[in-house]
Image (cartoon, rainbow, N blue to C red; front, side, top):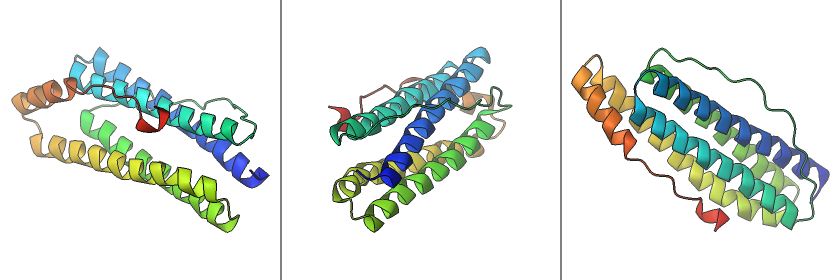
Length: 169
């Protein structure tokens, strides 16, 4: 693996761990506000982002590349509403998608076919991430100020369960 790709994937590992930390912060915020279902959704998301970091981590090791862990930047700790949190989530997932695409573009430029292949899983995963965040955001916007609607939505998100990423199995 060449140095450019190694550096890009190391940066992505840091970004995935930052994402995990962000989603854990969101979960903490909503659990403190009594929205345990929404908190659960973000806590599951936290675990998924850790999986993503580990997929990159193991991929780097399998290629004989050096993983270099850097400090994780501070994350926001308070969101006024679930709508605000899911707006931030969707915007963040779009940013992650751009980062994944840039790694793939670099792999194409550097003719690193193994990395191109690995990136297919992440590209597909990001489609799902953006879709789910977008659907939750739209549902919350439709609910508006309806307390019963928020109660039902919170219960629905409370049913979300963690499933280890298929690429780790």
